[in-house]
Image 1 (cartoon, helix red, strand yellow):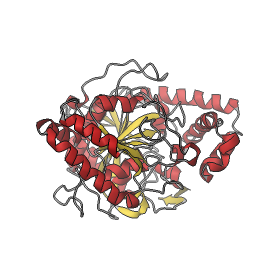
Image 2 (image 1 turned 30 degrees about the horizontal axis):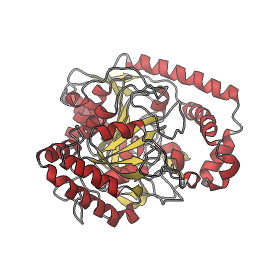
Image 3 (image 1 turned 180 degrees about the vertical axis):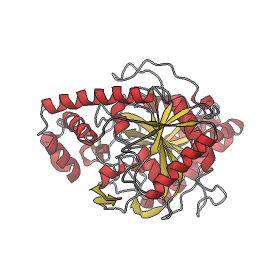
Image 4 (image 1 turned 90 degrees about the vertical axis):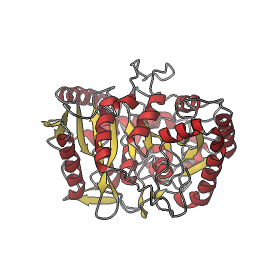
Length: 472
């Protein structure tokens, strides 16, 4: 497998192709050749739209497209409907199905000039955090192919980390962009619930689903969010909230900000090296003028149960249409989840909804005294493929529970959250730190994330590049 490599940033690539539009087709041809060579190992893509990408490149060369992401190649998790490519959800259930429309996020990126390369692999129907997929293979971690890339947006992370896309769309219901970003040394952003339209995205759990994105830098995340954000009446959860200048926010710095450090849950039963890396990031923020403030978040002892009681009835509600004829086509873990969902009562679901409202109120109260919260993204580094349970500082738990222990709560509150690289573990694997902000204040999240990224420097060494040559 090729070593992880630094792709050209989306901002620099868009600027360079505006100056030299004739270079776009060649860049796309090199990228497609690289994908053809590596996809058997990386398993990043389920399908590729080579003809569509070349057509888009020619439009860029003809100056027909002049958006902020013109000529920037990206991948979309195969939950987003597309006209030109099948949408499988990573499952045999939808094999052969093709939508007659593009998802709202795809539409916005197309108008901004971004070039869709293909549909990225995922845990079947986004039903897990390990990124496993029996139908299309499981993307391995780019830093160690014996380990997980994370999920459910595993292919999205693999595509960006291996230089097969500049950025990738994902979904995030419990950490499905932040977890693979942390495990693969990337930036993973979950905007506020309602900030980005989910229209045309196959749902997992309407109450918790967010459109997320994975990028190689905080700057790229800001640039892509600038295109994606905004009200869409086709999504009932979409918020009518003004969209600020996210790119400008990157230069704000952190001087004068109050940054909350949770007193419990988020710094317990975690790898000591991950905790040390998080504390180094916090110390650096303090050196740059931020004030660190202890904060008390709600008691999260029942948070995972609450999340599952909400998720599973909504999962079952969507998939019931396929069960009479296609139950056998689901993977074993999805079938088990759907079977479990049938035993959850309406009373349980309603209680879970009420509990989530309490979590939201209590979290808003905690955030009222600070500008953002910083935690580790995951308590562990990427586990070995096939791992079922892990033990971390005395706590034994299923691997999926461990990976999302610090992320899933913020899907319930709907707050914006971003994972940024925090350094390397002694195993050679990346670690991540999570920045959580007030609702619709992605600007502050991005500013803090940029300050952390400036401290870390480039995670990937562009001088080293890829062993077989960078694509972009």
